[in-house]
Image (cartoon, rainbow, N blue to C red; front, top):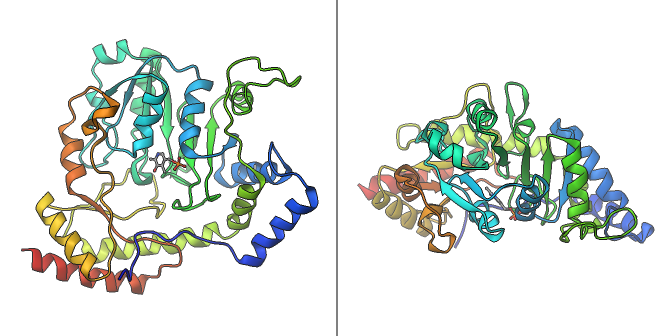
Length: 363
Ligand SMILES: *Cc1c(COP(=O)(O)O)cnc(C)c1O
């Protein structure tokens, strides 16, 4: 029996959600840039401290639409240490990808591993702020200027992450969010794109609505990636409580890190940035240790998840190139621990006790 789940989605108070849903019924407006959608877009942009934010129906389409809006070229550098959608979104749109290995401490794409030769042959970089830890945005920015590379950040983990006192979402030509039920802020299913330039945002708005211009004429090939009013209602109902939820999660992460500091390795957080409490990954000594700890924890009612595993470079259907031993090694040794809505630090302490027991037994 699962006593401590790996995730539990955050839900608003039912009355709050019902209030927003009654507005939808009053408006008789269900989708296509309805009033709730517009309200959420504005409030979210203000909350996150970003300018050109656009909601879409999920985080994967956020990536795909961003590539189209920026007219991303064919050859792309990307990270093998991310969720499937980072690579699949590129492969789906026939980009040729080259995996660049990650830094063993930050777990993010390592800009020093992008050779001049490779950079010269490529058109863009798609990088993930892994578990919300900001990438080396300055180095990537310098590369992008030197070689005219567009940069898209998969910021699905980086909700409300700051670097040097500013939203991390303001870096790159675009950043994308996932607002999936398992993320720290969600609309059940949903996503968002934050563009650097307004012109790209305007083009993207047309792209997610079949390419229609103001005369309902399909000016270019579009798709349907609109967020509907029912989903927007969930976002609005959750937005007020998001700060408090996040603070609770941050405290849980701190407790985990204090309790487990001598047992496992942790991801190194970038200077001048803050852990947003989205995930709690630990890095084991070996895959054998991970498997035995994981198995023992399952019997003790603690659910864990191998994330990200496997390395995307080991997924044949993506058919991508690149030599990425660090990503392969880390992906075999990394395990995410329970971190869910409503969790408190006492539960973390109880889980850590079970983890210590599992580690002792695995020796
Ligand atoms: C969740 C996630 C996505 C995909 O988002 P969906 O909203 O589920 O489509 C993409 N990239 C990363 C890193 C994610 O964690």
